[in-house]
Image 1: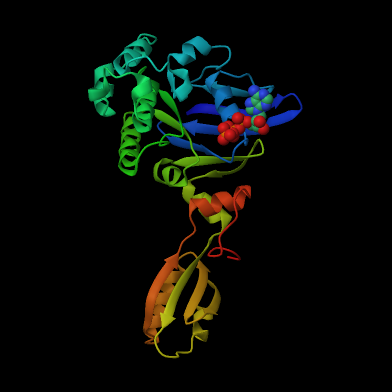
Image 2: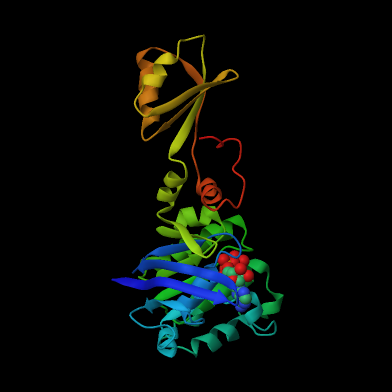
Length: 308
Ligand SMILES: Nc1ncnc2c1ncn2[C@@H]1O[C@H](COP(=O)(O)OP(=O)(O)OP(=O)(O)O)[C@@H](O)[C@H]1O
């Protein structure tokens, strides 16, 4: 059964249509990514799901509850990552966790969370004195202190250095492994690609694409490119006949073969069969970054992928 079921959400702020008939569902134990450019409607949609905003039209169920009508009950069962500005700078790390734990019927052990998120030694430090990465880890720990069944994490790895990001991703995987459903709002494509089972890509108040990160990449441009430098002057016309190949081009001393599906294996075996030696072989894969740009039009697609 879906843990979150949003159907036809519409929300206007005055004349501005922030959400225009948005529907999505999130299954139990999924890590579900919500992405899209600034102003796409992500926050509005998530706030409708959390019960912080009431949609003008449409329906939401979270854990079988109506977030607007059953808000107090639902808030016992979900965890929401706060913005940094929501915590007073003078509060101590340990105090913040104890305070937030006191709001819940079934809180997690604050000491355990401090250890898990690497904040044990910061227990008596004031929030305002923490580094950006420490603040971020405390905000995530606070989202988890109520032992939520659904956790909403926003820009998870903002301010974290590369090793802290990896550590945070590992911890989010652990949180999911314990049965928690995670909704991740993110602008970081590597994070989404690494963590999310499925994503909804928002643009202009609508969901313009959804599916696994791999499906989005395929939808935006299902072809990939193989590039190599032939040794000598072999006749490469035969490559155009290889199954899956859509184009064979020269690029200086290199040859670029475009294709879909498993064309690269077929090209490699055709080269071997005809005893054609190649050097400097590499594959150009589309990434979620390319898909994001192609599907939202919010960033230009680089030369490497143009025309593919
Ligand atoms: N309280 C509000 N009053 C008026 N307009 C609003 C309000 N909140 C959001 N908007 C507008 O609604 C649209 C969607 O905003 P929303 O914050 O949901 O987008 P977002 O995808 O979360 O953006 P960001 O990535 O910048 O946080 C934007 O055009 C925004 O300016």
